[in-house]
Image 1 (cartoon, rainbow, N blue to C red):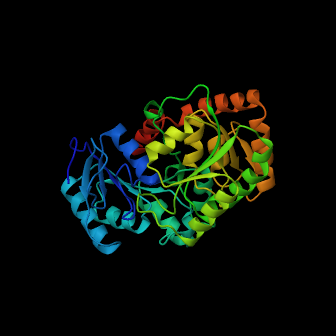
Image 2: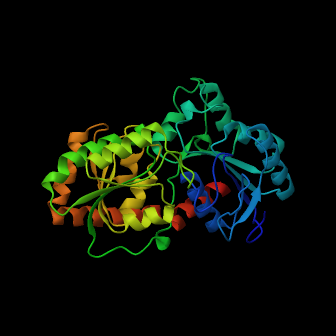
Image 3: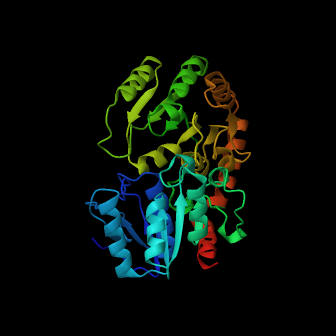
Length: 361
């Protein structure tokens, strides 16, 4: 399937598990489509019946990793792009760098590299740094993880060290912000234990009885897409939310999530695990909501001083932060203004310009 304009020397390769359609896109696909538009790049990914419009998309058929990788390589050999940007697939990046030495091959890391096949061992990470044009991590937290326990005798010139480049958000495409904002406390994300959804429900159950006129809402499913499964954990959280008087909307397309953020007064990102970046937190700030997040992983890099930061798993601290913001309009407005200002440094044109520099170095 081909849509949009022909590539101009840049090809971006998605993981085989990532959908590239508005109603099925996860964080990686959202980031790639923004960067692809900024650079008029070609995107290669799994076959989809309906992809993001206006982008040159090439479908790579076959089950991962072997058949998918072979079809990705087939497209790249036909395109011969000057820059090849592989997202989240280290072994594929190494293969393509070996087969296509004239192209600048860059590997983008969106999750903890120490948990990824092909990067768990220090020697594997060292080989990536010396064989690829760049290794780009979406946060300093991940870049430092990538550099963990590298061989002591390894000497890298600065150009070969892992680089932190934040994920972008196209501010001009966000829905208009509501004024005044609704008295809503919002959680938006996957309904899985590491995202801290249980802490959000516990905190809201504690805080809401003391906050007349306020309500809490949960948006999300087990995974991205309309076919998100009703897992036992999702069912348990749905029941707990109902008992606490919290709305549970289930999965909604990304556009609906952004619309909800544009009207909510408070957004909570109570992740228990070290978030590699924290795109939901960035979206909440850019949408003008007062943000509460946990002090873990890459989240503090995203929020700076704009959010109230609490410890992971601290439901009581989350309840206190919700109460403090809900009962102090001035504090909410100050956090919202700080978040909007903070988000400007993540605007897609800003991040795309930095990436273009890395491509040419």
